[in-house]
Amino acid sequence: LDPTGSCAGCGVQLQSQDKEKLGYIPGSAKEREPAICQRCFRIKNYNEAASVAVDNDEFLRLLGSIAATDSLVIHIVDLFDFEGSLISGLQRFVGANPVLLVVNKVDLLPKAVNLNRLRNWVQQQAKAQGLKTVDVVLCSAKRNLGFERVVEALEYYREGRDVYVVGATNVGKSTLINRLIRDYSDLDNELTTSRYPGTTLDAVRIPIDDGKFIIDTPGIVYPSRFTEIVPKTVLKALLPEQTLKPLVFQLNPRQTLFFGALARFDFVEGERQSFTIYLSEGLKVHRTKLERADELYVEHRGGLLVPPDESELHELPAWTRHSVRIPRGKNYDLFISGLGWIKANSMTGAQVELHLPKGVKVLLRESLI
Ligand code: GDP
Image 1 (cartoon, rainbow, N blue to C red):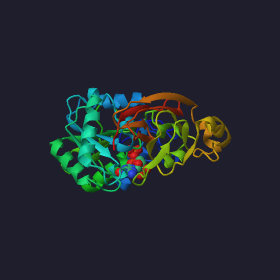
Image 2: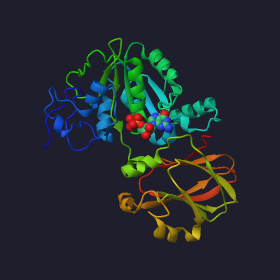
Image 3: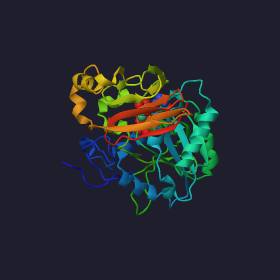
Image 4: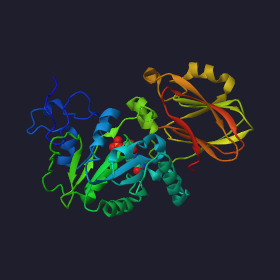
């Protein structure tokens, strides 16, 4: 029994199958008049945005319609998965509209990190990806760090226009929008869920004081992020909640680290050196000899090596192997989208291998920290 028709709020096609996908309406609410999706319902009744996800094609269609508006675009990215959550090609779709880059989850980095340096790093990376930004703001939506700067920048660059908020899933978009709703919105007045005539934007419009809107777009799903390919139960273990506690490993060549049974890192060749691991505390790191690694994995995945546990193992794609030459002379991170990164400390170079589920994005970058 699938409800037909579209949401009177955002215009999306209604469905009762998948809570996390666009247009979800509980079976019991199908008779609601007017029929609105769960996402619009929550904003309207609880002043609360919730995450929904769409695939790339749908997202691009949505983005394409932003170019025709006169607005400010807030692109929110996750500092923990920076390269994985940056929307490459955003520039093409937003047209002449200014983009404010909001980098969320700064609370995860150790306090000693120099924020100016970090900001420069972010600016450089964004530029390298072809993204022109009017400004970069670092914040933590959850811990309420730097949020005044977000509001200030938003007001400054908005110049009385609507604000589109775009981002990948799990970057903290809902958390941020919920803060904005509390600070900004005019929801005591009736939620005017008016749609752009003739278009379906699938975007929830949250009215703000001056008659303009903050427009919440669905989160884009990138299958190259670890967080998208693991079962829901494992996702919790991957998303760090607290400030990262870097783990330092002194490794001899031909030693291996397992990250649960999710990924494996082999130090194949190079001088004895230290590697610093930045990942969620929910993941157990296990060290072994390279010679033992294959056998250990076969015997202990889902047991000693968790997550995922035995029943979830089959839900992950098989591993593929990436050989990486870490050059000498600089500090590099081996970045694994959605999982974290491994910093090579010695600057003497190394030959390493990563075993990751097929499709997960991995890259070598200049060290973040
Ligand atoms: P959305 O999918 O982009 O809407 O993201 P959510 O707002 O649902 O947040 C995704 C996950 O990131 C949740 O587990 C949040 O608790 C967490 N999160 C959001 N903002 C922050 C933040 O500033 N710091 C940290 N450490 N976690 C955050």
